[in-house]
Length: 322
Length: 102
Length: 160
Image (cartoon, rainbow over all chains, first blue to last red; front, side, top):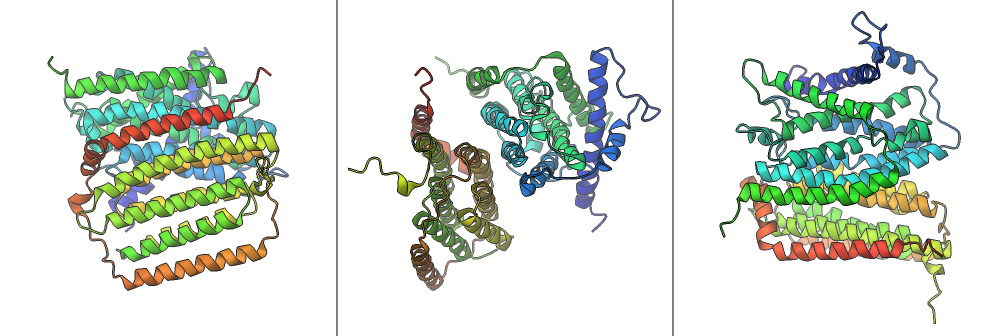
């Protein structure tokens, strides 16, 4: 049982161990990329290879900090919310096909399942913000609620275009439907909407209102100490990894690529490119205001997403001959 | 696989809990909980009955899809009414809402 | 599998009705919805199950939590001394349960077979869009009406 392929997949790759390591490496990469854009050097000393072990050092440091639950806070939800968030983030990665057959859960409705798990996160963040019994976390939780529920709808609608093109909701079959051409070309508008809304769902700059450091000092994460802070930060990086992998599955042909290198390489390369793109967004754009964010979500993005479905209809069915 | 009766049993128990909450609670939000539980009992019942024949009756799943959407709408309207009531009355205890009493 | 989901559903439903704190109640309600979604998975209705998770937990529970936090969790918690009424209701409900249980036991329902191609997603989607296209459109009309109604209800008169 300990050497069965499924067990190895769950524990090693694409499962838990690799998620933890990749999450930590993404933290390092983000700091390095941001530093390069701002003409700094970034983490340097934690290992010979350009501080690549920085996040592991941070992890050790954080885990030695005192673990306490603030007074008058709701201890159950305070601890439950970030840990459940970590579990859900790991579940997202389990749905992604990394290579033919290298997928933990190959279910028929993989894409709706991914998006349905994403919709659970505002509940957890609202609970986390409420449980801390403090102003800034609660404001952060409410912002997360407004932002994520507003951007879920364009996210689902933009994914609909890909489902219409591929004729299936199974992620592995969506990849196989792109052998004749990646969906990024016919679904350019859909890909744009998906990227914008997924950045908003991940709460990354320019949409990081729920944890805006300069306004509400880390928002819903403000009260978290030590290891719990790590557990609150972790889902962000895991979601970045999962969303980038989903983007490359949906629009960039997933594991398809020239056959002189294994499919897994192409998948990871595309994921890495998307990750770096999202990180560059972070260091390029300023943070939006809440009213701008909501207006853009409910009007512009929603209209564009519906428009994209119309375009896709004509792409799939063809123009009716008059 | 479990016989279908056990699914019906779960559904009936959910319905019972919902009716119990509906009759004994006076908090508007708590009553909304009960209504949602009753919705879920009905959904579960429909999905289980759809499996009575082989191949399953797809209409059951379609119906449940509609019901779920309806329940979400009902919750949205109901919650906005609750917010309005709490703004006007500073209390959402339904037995104290007697302004319209003639 | 079935037993676990059923136990979670029923336990969380009781907790949702009886929990002292409304925030806990709402979260328990979310767990109960998750349990029902699990039962849908057991019944091979995976798409409906995920839809249930997305709509109920992703939208309804978060709305309820928001309302609870806005209205104030401690408000409206006046127990009206209805001990006798709740006892009566519990007795009535258990009577109803017993009767239905006896009825269900009397009718021998067959266990569902593995459904094979009958549970195909394409069958479901064809039925949804071809046979039930008009009801679907009416549903979206009702949904638009509900959204407009909710907006109109919660609109505050800022000018006055």
